Image (cartoon, rainbow, N blue to C red; front, side, top):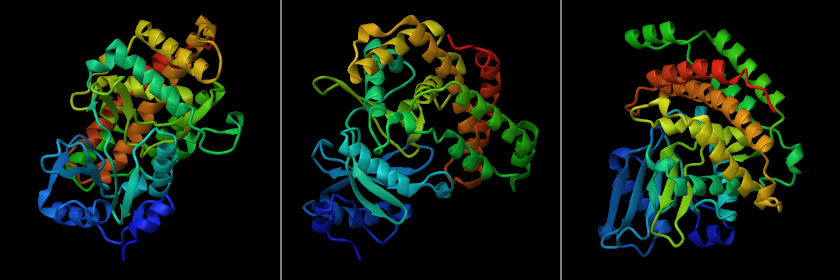
Amino acid sequence: MAQSVKAARAENQPLQLDWAVDTNHIEEDAKKVLRHIRPDWPPDQIQFKKFTDGITNKLFGAYLEGSDMKDVVLIRVNGEGTEVIIDREAEVRTFQLLHANKCGPPLFALFKNGMSYGFVQGEPLDEDNVRDERVATLIAQEMVRLHSVQPDNKPPSERCSQFRTKAQAFLNNVPTGFDNEAMNTRFLQSVPSLSALQTELDSICQELESLKMPTVFSHNDLLLRNIVYDSKSKPDAIHFIDFEYAFLNYQAYDIGNHFCEYAGMDEVDYDLYPDKDYQVKWLRRYLQFDFTAKGRSPQDVTDIDVERLYVQTNKCACAAHFFWSLWALIQAKNSSIDFDFLGYSITRLSEYTRRKKEFFPLALP
């Protein structure tokens, strides 16, 4: 039995639908959802577009024929086994928090294995345009806007990063082996033991905690496909999407994780990781926006401020490599999506090891 649209809107809550969407009958099942969200849409005029960029969930957009996709409703079916790595209740709270702060789209409905929400206009970034000076400036500005969201009534100084808790939860769910013999051999040869991974995680957390970084509400997964550039809006704008992994975290982590993603996803090239000259310019812009948001003059940003954030950001980038390597191991065991998660994990672990030697020795100014 579905909750009434009128009751849900009165409470500013998403509709609660008590059925699952079958991806083998996506159009038929999605129309059942749309019947509640867009009751005025004629079923025979509804068109669907499959978005194939994600490697966690299955995502479809619904729109009316001839509408030029001006009103698109997204239907997302959660990936198999993702409840192990994603707190779906927390994700709903995040959706509501961000929409209330004009940082995210509305959440329309929840069904047993997914949700329906608003579409963000624009095009996902790629390895080239993420470096465009205008785009990079807008990303820094939007990141400051997100980091300024207040998720609770606590003073910022009393908030603690959840990185250790989230990474430990991932590690606790890392598989010890695989049924596929070739895959298992690759796993045993290339991935450290659980005890070795635990030692690394403890070392990372100790290092990050020593840096005394501000804790903010973070996206934590700003890969290029989760950043949308709307060049047609006036003025042009950057939007962040897919907040499944959002939680309280170190300010520098969101930035460092984003820099890691300059390498791309399909053909990962970590030589595309931004060099220091690029980072210093980017970080100065971020700090200038951050100072302005806090009522300070952007001219107050000093070279020491930038250097401090540079050190923090690159140590956090190492932590991000390790975090996503654990995530990918869990996905390799549970996901039905056609992607080499084990290979991705091995690549991230290798880059973690390489970058740790480079960045962990850096000292704060």
